[in-house]
Image (cartoon, rainbow, N blue to C red; front, side, top):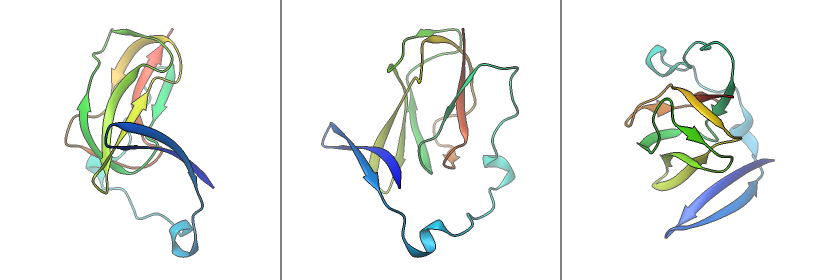
Length: 113
């Protein structure tokens, strides 16, 4: 089972999906250009909730964010997924750029205290 947030016509829905059959097979190798960036010295990582493409980033390094603030938007299968801050802190690194393809679980950004 996997929890996802999907947005349909501007309204967000939290859904739980069950992976069946080959969907749980070993993932394909990640190209070097899309590999997660190295650790930037601690902090809370913001993982990608799914594989997709970075559409936009609404924050900057050094910006203070609160838990639940929108950080960026990903697109997968023509649907946008908003990525929110998992906790309050200062954005210490943004590890992706608009247009980048990301894998599920890949670090998108880091938050420091």
